Length: 478
Image (tube, rainbow, N blue to C red; front, top):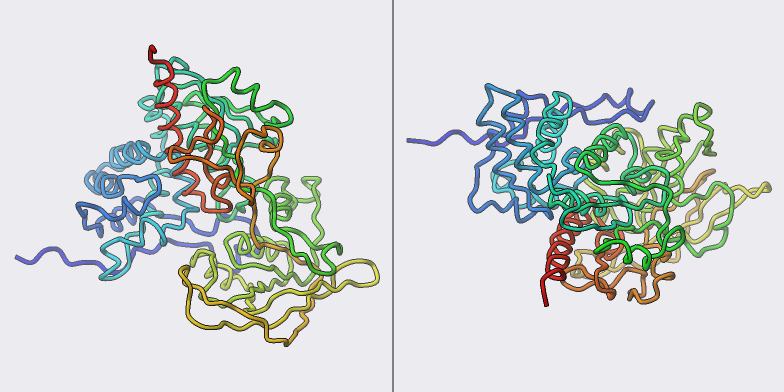
């Protein structure tokens, strides 16, 4: 007897129409409803072993939660509760990862369905489960199962930074029974999730709820605490059994070319922080203004560049992304590039900036680029070497946003000199993510340089396990 017919195409998720979304910071993708989520879940082949699990940095039991979702299709609340329980075993922040993870490069890349058609839309299913559970009170009910009755009994851990690595590490340790305190330098928790990702990709309401959930698990968050200034690493080690450093990569890389100090030249980090964290887009309702002209050039082609470009467009500017390589080398997610193009962002390739040109008032008015060209075979990263052609082009711009990458800040390592670092400022760790100081662990961009949210979360989860083993071993009788 023939098996069920394979449905090759994904069940689509609706999106806000382009003409509406470019006028506001409303979330673009609207996600699945229950009926469409179950329909997409039914496409899953339930592979065993499942390559999608290995593709996920936090190793969510993807076939398991998808099976739970579709097994109880007649009872949405029961289906979602069972699915969420399985997800939370490995990931306590699915409403975030379901939105910002590059699933197409990770869990969805090895999906067997992708060989016959389109891979299962794992990210949107994960997001659906989290959103439905929050809206229907299922999340609060399930939290009781995951809240440890031994809070603080197993020990105390300090987590430095409330980005994805820190939040994940804190959540995992809280579930194990540790008393966890997060120290955050800014006035709002979330790290790059709150200052670096725009509302149209990750609504602050969603982020705030995910963080509130950790507080309900027993995690304490201390804001406006700069470890290395407000409190030292040594002082933390005196009070806590272990410390996890998840301070991310918040120091922007700059271009060392003439005109860099002209007005209206921003780093993407500053531009997005003003808009996302300080709500400059709501000026004068919020008193943080941002000066943006009629023509903006964004230099770079990663997710941060897309976020900056799409934010500038919503602020009323005509936006062009200039990249020194070709389209095939862009590192941004395909979905984000698609959305940017739909919204009217223009792309210029093989252009390398060599000078910012200013007007008589000290404001940028144009960018001079050298035209580039690729040479030879692709390297191990799939990229070809590029060289200058000696030809130049000048593009008008009264605003420039530089989005060429970030590196870790060195506040902690400059204060705690026993912390070994690499030349780029990343912390040196062993296979268990322990730094050169016993009892101090690190993960995420602090050890990798700029990377993805889910890789940072994978480090946070791995570090939590290593911290538990370290503390329990330390307490064994000699």
